[in-house]
Length: 203
Image (tube, rainbow, N blue to C red; front, side, top):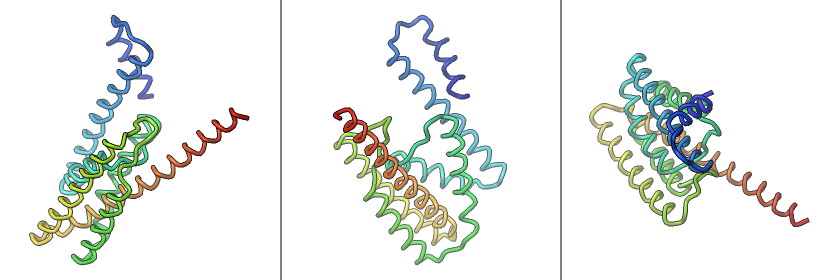
């Protein structure tokens, strides 16, 4: 549905341009990216304010999104699914932390363990965006820096009685780790299918 809408917009904007099919797909990809971000950020802020989850919203937007971009992981196949998937993850991250109250020690152990696993596994690219070794190295470094920064910030907040920040970050880290693991498995499946097709052609 979103793809059809953006396709119509793309045809109107590029009507007087001479474009190859490949160039046109690039334009549509950019439109999709901008549209998706506008819709998601609008929904996230609105939900955060209406549901009185402003602190949780800020932690998600400032922790999950940057770390997700540097670490990578599984991606949905269409814009529609991606938006629904993103909103679902958002709800999980703003409501799950209030259901548990972890101690400082347990929170720090979880944060450090999850952050370490994320740094080790990242970045996980996808079929639409393959990364060369240089970009992978840079993304891994950024992921490590962000993880250390967020874990340090949550420690400072904890001593200023904002104990829920640790729970929020633990949930963010857990979600990102799961997305990385799913992305790795999906890439393995794609690679196996590609190898199978290649071998079939030889036969």
